[in-house]
Image (cartoon, rainbow, N blue to C red; front, side):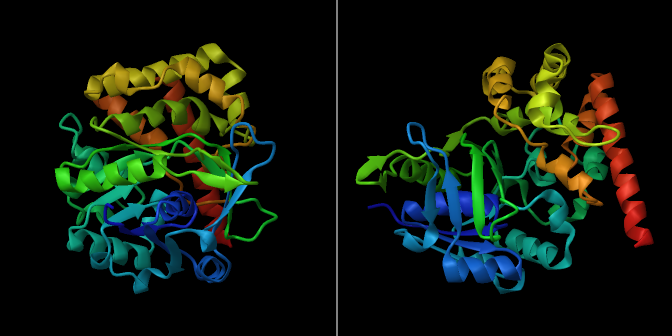
Length: 358
């Protein structure tokens, strides 16, 4: 039997989703999160609800009843050197918080392989792509300095394609999966580090879960790819859907953002794909618009970025700004992307002004 791994997750939302799948496969996951989350997860487990094809209601997983273990704690209590893999499962602005920034510095110093499942690719990861000038895009990050001590050779990116959220009426240890697609990771530069991901991929694929006496295959798997561009397929989806939820006076669902004018959505989507190809991607690394548009039909809520802005967040992940900057560097400016960036900038300016007044 292959060795089981100890995995450190920074973040308990997507962290609990991938951590639960790892624990079902017998691995051990430790989630770094807020005190209230940690207390509930340690006492009652992380609870993940997954829709499963062919079943009427969602399957509820509880990490307290798994072959592996899931625990939780504070940033200051985690020693990255104790783990085989570190997974970055917080949104990018959260790494500017002192306790998390200090932990990320310890992650970098440990030299442990690090996989990000943020929408916003870590600056260290983008330095793996020769066509990107990392220094020219630093201002797209909330605090670019947090990545200075993370070696590009030890970091990879995993696209957080599954859609999941915390139901507001539930305890904070409950995660509901809305769109149960797969995590798509690029390989590490190192074969040994990549072997850890390949093992997780195989172990998660082999899971069968007992539901009423029948063994079922659970969705949301990990897929490992050789191309560094595969996780960047999410950029087109974010710019055609997620960020276009942001309107001047409020937010609209992803479904409406995409399907209210399919021609405009397709133009934005394909323009961002063209940018990825210009940066070195193969079109086969990317997802056709029609497949994304069909998936977007089930996305009846505004994106997490839009909801955060509406709730007054002073910072969000700025993939819109990153794509705008990269497009400008390749003479591929887009009026639609520029308009989106302008709208997001406006919401952030208002939110920061309100925060200062408060």
